[in-house]
Length: 164
Image (cartoon, helix red, strand yellow):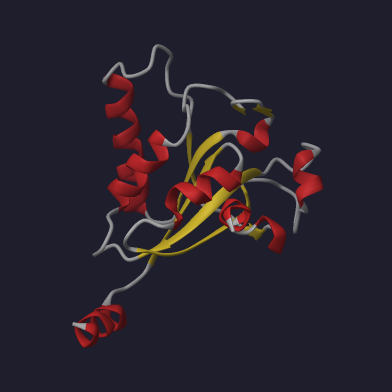
């Protein structure tokens, strides 16, 4: 069995997905231990400021969203499953806000890396909006991925570190 698993990992091409849904610590934790997810990291995307720090983003001068970037095996976990986790880990109807966190850095956003991801994200959003699951319309942005700026080491897997 171990040999078969090793062979699969050698032939299974990895993909990347990027999601913003409030504080990146919680978003990363929602994806981190899913079967088929290879790794997660937190950082910033969607702004106009090169190499932003946490304080730069917090000050709302960069235009970036706090995001979790997910590296995954599409044959082991589908992008649709990742979208389901995304929709369920936050309230996609609140503009620039999640719980007590307020500001554009906490916006609900899906950054797509391939045209297939863009199509899937738009279809998923439309279906969820049409389902009347929420009393208010979904405000989640769906945008092409841009430069990803990795957050400092102390922010990586922050919640997992707090449990130890």
